[in-house]
Image 1 (cartoon, rainbow, N blue to C red):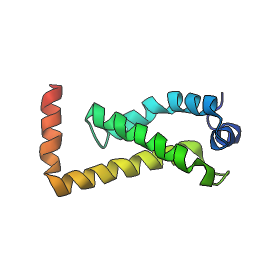
Image 2 (image 1 turned 45 degrees about the horizontal axis):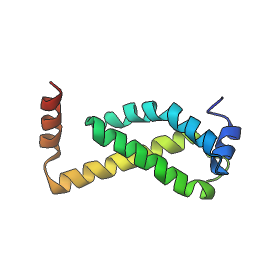
Image 3 (image 1 turned 90 degrees about the vertical axis):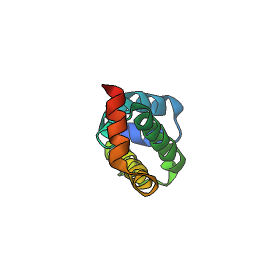
Length: 106
């Protein structure tokens, strides 16, 4: 299946669950890797990607058919990651959060 094709995008937008599941399985590891560049915590990263797919699924009917699926998913997960970073900065020191997560890794 060509995940860059308009055909798969249109199937996903129309609510075709098997196509959505294939897109999810294909893009999840890539988006998780991308998100970990912002949020190195594995659990947080996975939750951001899951939430991104949920948001995408909720808004799929309002998307322009010319939308690039990969770009859309990357944008959603990036924005969610940046929102979490903003929340962390306002709630506690982000540097301490990253340091604590890095210490847990080592």
